[in-house]
Length: 162
Image 1 (cartoon, rainbow, N blue to C red):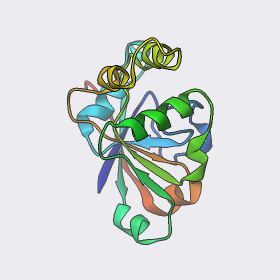
Image 2 (image 1 turned 90 degrees about the vertical axis):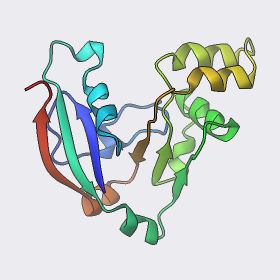
Image 3 (image 1 turned 180 degrees about the vertical axis):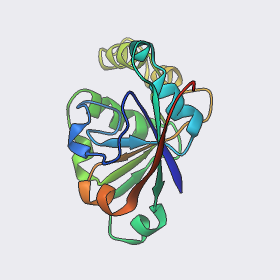
Image 4 (image 1 turned 30 degrees about the vertical axis):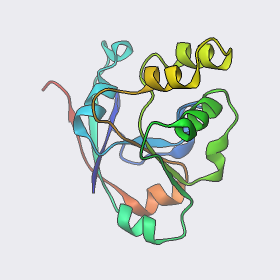
């Protein structure tokens, strides 16, 4: 399957250890099967004065899923997804039990919403509503370097806007 990674650099050889801590699905290499979404990642406001690059890969997801990989997929925004994202954003590292995590993205208001939810100022249902993106989205976080090395193959990078 074709997957994308929006960035400010060309990423020919992704490293899972370079990712930031305390993200939705943990510290790994994030891709999406939605080109528009990866482009939006590259076009975030703090990247405005930098090169904006769309990295394109072939990912042998079928091969990965037929192996004994520890894979967690969230098909819906629900309490399980919310608890997982909140725990990882708080540094609880639930992601370390998996090698790939896939599912929806928490929207840009995630920090405020998580603070309100953990302080019990908004109920669970309101937190879920606030964290959901309204348009289709998907993120795949590869947490194990050998999965990247063996199953994610760089195709090309494209400078956005050129």
